[in-house]
Image (cartoon, rainbow, N blue to C red; front, side, top):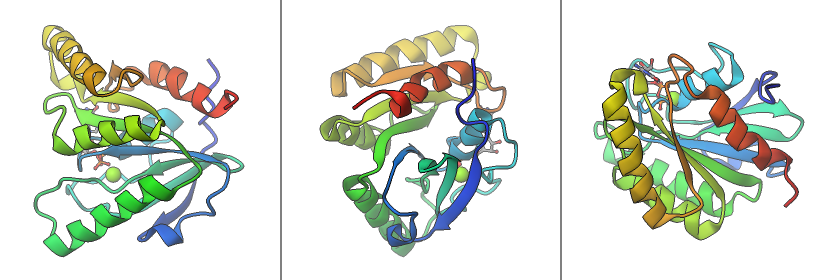
Length: 200
Ligand SMILES: Nc1nc2c(ncn2[C@@H]2O[C@H](COP(=O)(O)OP(=O)(O)O)[C@@H](O)[C@H]2O)c(=O)[nH]1
Ligand SMILES: [Mg+2]
């Protein structure tokens, strides 16, 4: 399968939403708790090892990182939410910025919600699912770090989380993933590619 995202380039890092690229074209956001694997997922999807910076220290990459794979088509690595050790003031700043981004960004067409398969469906993940559902955006959940679980536990978690998601948002899809091993990368690409190409 041809990879729509293989010619992806870093565009800009924004500390505030008014520093983002012009709100034109289409973009999708990668959301998830700090350390869930958002940056590693973007690298796996684009087949570009050092594109998005993978952090060794959780909570460090607190910026909107924007990547462009075609003119006016972007992937946005959102600041990680829910990291406990971030100072309250900084947390407030990011909650506000992410909130505003989600509500106001016209070019946003979908969101990929990344969860650590060992700790899925935390409060912020659920909030994001509710929000995606209410705003009628495309949404897809990755149960990442599947390399950390055996097959049986992986299957069980997928079933459990899929059931929980369907109660919140029937149109949201969910898959098992390992950004580290690129397991499930073709499935991910197969789900989000039509978001950009279908007529709306
Ligand atoms: N075992 C494993 N580790 C992963 C996987 N994806 C990411 N990581 C690791 O988790 C840490 C956080 O990843 P990062 O992409 O920076 O998370 P982010 O904060 O959500 O952007 C890094 O040490 C990654 O190497 C995965 O699929 N499996
Ligand atoms: Mg990151």
